Amino acid sequence: MAATAKPTTLDPHDFLAIDALLDEEERAIRDTIRQFVRERVLPDVGEWFEQGILPGELAKELAQLGLFGMHLEGYGLPGASSVAYGLTCMELEAGDAGVRSLVSVQGSLAMFAILRWGSEEQKQRWLPAMHEGDVIGCFGLTEADAGSDPGSMRTQARRDGSDWILNGSKMWITNGTIADISIVWARTDEGRINGFIVERGTPGFEAPEMHHKLSLRASVTSELVLHDVRVPEESRFPEASSLRAPLSCLDEARYGIVWGAVGSGRACFEAALDYAKERIVFGKPIAAYQLTQQKLAEMALEVNRGSLVALHLGRMKDQGTLRPEHVSMGKMGNVRGALEVARSARSVLGANGITLEYPVIRHMNNLESVLTYEGTHEVHTLVVGGALTGENAFRA
Image (cartoon, rainbow, N blue to C red):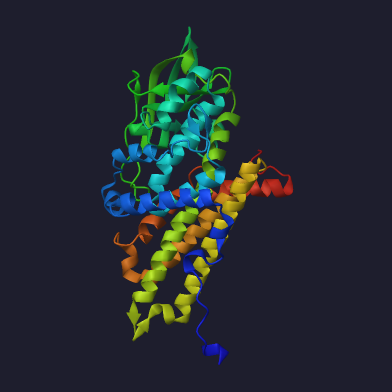
């Protein structure tokens, strides 16, 4: 009877045959990064997460793969397609969001800020070295009381002759403690928002690492403290004068998150699927029970839906038609979906779902940070809502 017939077997890892939508070069890049993650990240990332570390040598290895600023052009940068970069983010985050964050902050925040808003001298000095991994950067925008509302930042920059004096602090800064240069955004006496390149070791500048995290533990998270930090005019971004500058960098980084979240969700789904086939309860694998199949089907739906959204946005970005509102929809949908997948996968694994022997609880904890950083779910919801209605919900 049809009701008892065995379902047709499809590839559970590519249920909708999305792989066929990629060209040969895109698949080659994805497979290279996937292999790197399998060999270099997955064997040890549970231990890194438990210890709260990310090995310093990993940055150089990622640079040797050409991943730092891979999607940027000029100054010796590869100029890879947006889809290729997105696939890279997906595979890196399938390993761990901390690894993807390292690449994302270096390329899409710090390097992009210099490329888009910096002087010619700044570009020539820093971009090639950052691509090679000889210089690590971070991006200092968020403050303790200025997260979703960066316009309320308190970090100040005042003129002193030909120099600038910076005072203030930044919070939740990925790579901050290990960074050789920090992109610091500050408000001038004229009320403008300027970006400054602050080098490690500059008097008055400190970047203590933040501890006691239960999310993104395999990532360096820092505070930036600036007390009468003197930087020369040559360290200021000459093209930046408003919030438009740092927000453009965030748009670039959020695009990578759209893909990265799919990687986290996929890793959780695959772990749950494999476990369900092997775990025997009442004489048969739990994959044979209807409730488990429902969970797996809904997880597969979210992973495939998210993959298609990410790929579509990537094609739009390569064609020059992608808008910030599109990225907001991608981030809010894909991160929320990945978090739902992670939570469902944890229930399939039962008690094993909370151990670092499996990747699920690690990804689930990481996604709690991804949900709120670089724009909270609520903020992106209002960005999309504003685009739909023409009404600005942020205006007082």
